[in-house]
Length: 172
Image 1: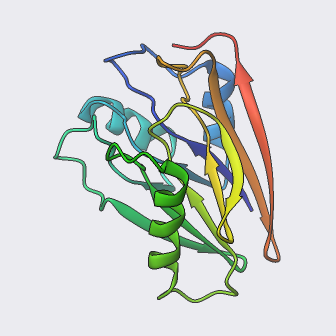
Image 2: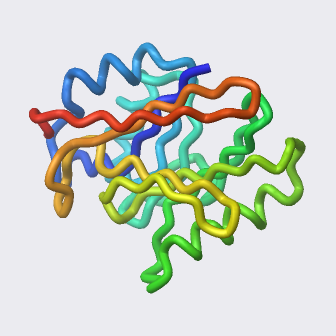
């Protein structure tokens, strides 16, 4: 199964649109994960049309009307994905996100393979902290402070997760 991992679109606050190559990747993915900061209800609704099979969480810049919990869990092929925005002004971002993922995944089925998907920093991250793989796809539109538009795809098969980072020059 292929997942499109995105975050921090910030439309219309900091960006106008998602780059076209990313639109195509999102549209063709088996499932899409958005780690928050759509920035507006209209941006969220447009994203829902683009990605009807969507797991999303709100970010610190999102309206309270977004119909999603602050942390979501998705179990795919022996991997538990825990999605959170990752905000809160914590100095230990990576430790905080790993802790949220461990806590949430503790009650989920699976083989202990936990992947956290988070946003907020606009900085691409693919690291392992305290046994939890952390993925931050950066900003799908290249919204400041990001320097480029980025997203990730993750191919999940039999408990393995193969991640690719994608960059686009025509950020929104």
